Length: 260
Image (tube, rainbow, N blue to C red; front, side):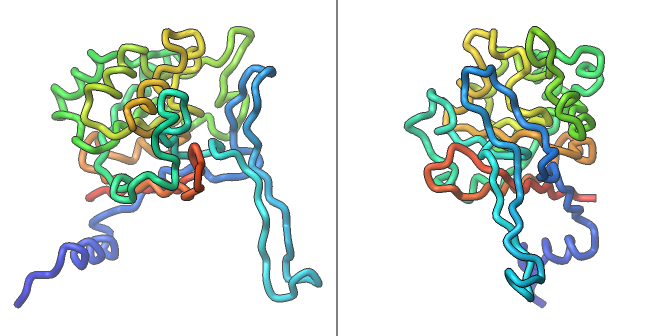
């Protein structure tokens, strides 16, 4: 008897539950938290639905909506062209489809972030994780678990700002450079509103995750949920951004496949 194909085996494992599909996407609505920039800069739009018809005289048998949203609202994908360092790079529609499916490493710093919302991951933290779990996946994602998804019900709690600005965890400048220029991953995924730490406006360079990652033809995934359901290694991430032509990014449905 011929052996089943790899795709047939995958389909069977999905049906049986041997492979679980974990949704890493934050639901998208008018209450989805958005990043807030200083007033002198342009602001991203809050997600909005505009009803076209709902089984009425505007359309008796169908329900549908228009929607308005920023590219970087909710769970979303950052393409290289999003930042000035990557301005000659790919827009979101030009990201190769093969790079949207990749293995993932999940680094758990939720305990440290619970103690200090300004917690910064350093290269030594990643090296210590690799000593316990093996190297970061070549061509994969580094996902940063901080427990921040528990705050996603509230704009105020999620952004966590005071008179000095936002306070959310992230990478130090040296660590951001290392992930972008020396690590084998294709991108960084986080639970916070953006890939950079809340205090990154005052780092050198400012917003180093954006600066280094985009400038190195790498990607960002933000406002992820349910990273606690993933193992440190072994999951496969499927990131599906809208292919907006010339877009700097797009809302995305992000799924993880986990072998149980």
